[in-house]
Amino acid sequence: MSKELSFEEKLNKLEEIVSELEQGNIDLDDAINKYTEAMKLAKECSKKLDDATKAVNKILNADGKLEDFKELEKDTE
Image 1 (spheres, helix red, strand yellow):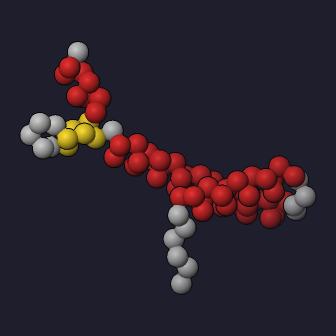
Image 2 (cartoon, rainbow, N blue to C red; image 1 turned 45 degrees about the vertical axis):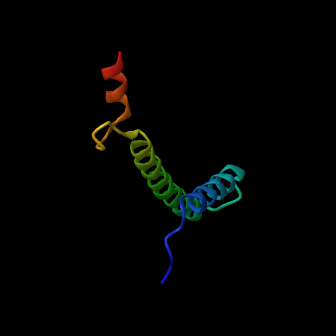
C-alpha cells in the first residue's frame, strides 16, 4: 500500500519529470507515460493550491463566522 505524496513531494516529482522530458533522452512510449504522470501531478498540485487559497481567504467576522476576505474588503470601502 503506497502512501499519498505530500504537495512538496508531488511538486518535486513533477520537476524531475519535466527535467527528464526537456533532456530528450527518453523513448517515445516512456515520454508519453511521463507526460501523463506529470499532467496528473500538475492537476493535483493546482487543486491543492486552489484549496489553500480559498482557506487563506477566509476571515472570522465579528459574529465569529467565516466569510470571504474579499467580501469583507468590499464592506469597508
